[in-house]
Image 1 (cartoon, rainbow, N blue to C red):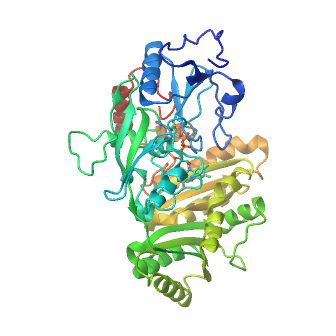
Image 2: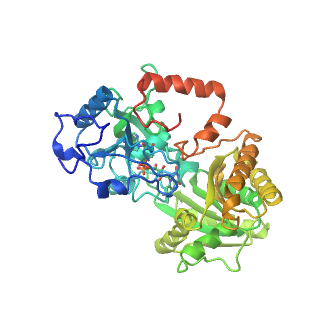
Length: 471
Ligand SMILES: Cc1cc2nc3c(=O)[nH]c(=O)nc-3n(C[C@H](O)[C@H](O)[C@H](O)COP(=O)(O)OP(=O)(O)OC[C@H]3O[C@@H](n4cnc5c(N)ncnc54)[C@H](O)[C@@H]3O)c2cc1C
């Protein structure tokens, strides 16, 4: 056993059935796991558990259940709602599946892959590519986030317009309940109507219902031709006109359609001065888009769509990447957002969605209301426009420190009011976690929240899985 503190008054003896090296209480090892990626919330924990198999996870959960020990399951710790950070009580242990990171199976005929929960997303993508297939979930954090994390948060990302959210790719799950029972799997079935589909409750449950140990996913065909472009334009409304125009030309070939405001691009330039934005002079808004298909005419179709858009005045300027390296450089700009925002000082982030056609009015309402009511707050927008999902960041660095709490409350009221007035969602893809709990209490429908509580009670009656997340 490594450095496990023996004198914590509340810590129970460790389970004798598990090898000692599953555990460590080393403060240095624990340190990086006690805060969320944005560094906004901080917790405490006395123990990290790193089991090597599903049976070890089950033994751990039986012990946790018997001793009433809270368990925070952590993947790559890249989540943006604080759901993988323990609370401040110090009673929780952190459960990491990092030693369970194997790809168990790839079937390029049935188009399925089975990966363990600790497998990093980029490794899963690479394995699919090696088999001539595509695993299409793509996020800025793909080099660190894990299979368990993308399943537990139902991660979205830039390719949802074509391939859906993580949920749409999950065929089956293997998981361990709070009491330590193993639900075996994961099955790779496309058809399975035996009773309630519990898999869909676990997807997006943020570690509050079960510990996912492995997942079976659908793979998709890898488009032979892929083309990326960056457009500069004047408004979100024009961006939706462009979306329509591109879809008319490339149809289902559209893979990604991302909208970013000039203020967000400025933050990227500030944080990464070496990155080049290939559109000069600067535009008020930018669209990053990608199309893919097996048809060789795709490049002509996309070029024509962009030329038409220029003729019709939908866009001010457009550049199409002429090589894989140029495409990568474009998407590098888009993926730099989270890091740029993290460096921008105090901020209030939102991850909201509305029906896609309501997006322009939503952004306009937020911008004008903030300017009128909290003029020192600057706001930047970036997001998955074709999905109606926008990441809104209210920057507080010009607000005097003593006024920041009041400004935060005002910003939240304005943004959530604009969302609810359009029947939108206060959390589109990042989940509720710890940071969204207050908004969840206020804005989620009471009947749905009550049903969710009963589901939580059924899966985890003692409330040991991720206490403080969601409820
Ligand atoms: C730069 C950057 C870009 C991002 N872009 C996007 C984006 O475009 N779209 C998007 O949706 N998200 C995005 N995210 C958020 C984040 O990467 C995703 O939510 C990701 O799915 C989290 O995976 P993780 O392994 O890091 O999970 P963690 O952060 O470790 O955990 C997240 C949640 O999953 C639970 N969990 C983890 N593993 C398991 C398991 N095995 N069993 C049960 N529960 C588990 C945790 O308890 C927690 O509730 C981004 C984050 C960063 C830092």
